[in-house]
Image 1 (cartoon, protein in one colour):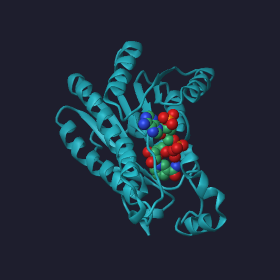
Image 2 (cartoon, protein in one colour; image 1 turned 45 degrees about the horizontal axis):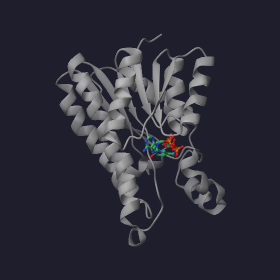
Image 3 (tube, helix red, strand yellow; image 1 turned 60 degrees about the vertical axis):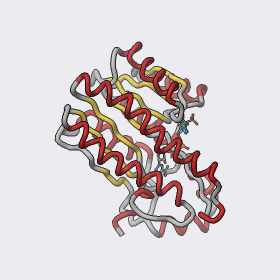
Length: 247
Ligand SMILES: NC(=O)c1ccc[n+]([C@@H]2O[C@H](COP(=O)([O-])OP(=O)(O)OC[C@H]3O[C@@H](n4cnc5c(N)ncnc54)[C@H](OP(=O)(O)O)[C@@H]3O)[C@@H](O)[C@H]2O)c1
């Protein structure tokens, strides 16, 4: 079992919840970050009843002070941070001609600024300790273009190239940054899509595996990158997408 300490952003539901639970099941002590405090406590209780350890820290990743408090809380409770999972993210489906500045900013504030703020806090600590790992949850939409998703695709492309740049900085002091690019996983982020039979059929036709992923299939890869991958593996983006981005 591991004695590592991890922060998972967006741990209140969906992929972040699955990642937090999987890390905790492998013995990692987990700080659950997000804005929905009741949901974070639900996840904490489930982790604890399975024998794991978790701390809830209400956090808005777009707010630098809130992110600083997140890292302070992790250090106060667990005496350090070894792993950061930048998972918090939002999307919107709007064609560019109708996309307003507020939607663009909201997506970039969460998906890019949030990742930057959390990674900066983590990197300062990793530089001191000479080790540490960050895993960024990008998207297949950061590897390909999709009509109606220009802001989201641009933000996830930024996640991937941020990963590449920071990995090169951190390799000098022994820390790693990698990313995962999920395809479609059934979570709240695509609840509307899953209600629309025609749109769903179109999505499934694009996925060679002809199904959505199960959150634990992504969590498994994130946990591998967090605790088992060799230190020499860095800057990679691993698509977990049933083959969607291969065709
Ligand atoms: N599901 C998919 O098919 C899919 C595919 C590709 C990529 N992704 C990516 O995977 C990640 C997780 O998505 P999901 O599908 O699990 O979506 P979700 O079910 O909608 O969950 C999103 C999570 O992000 C958190 N979050 C949003 N804004 C935040 C903020 N300002 N501060 C802190 N936390 C915030 C939410 O927590 P609170 O609301 O509690 O703050 C929630 O826990 C995202 O980065 C998403 O882009 C998902």
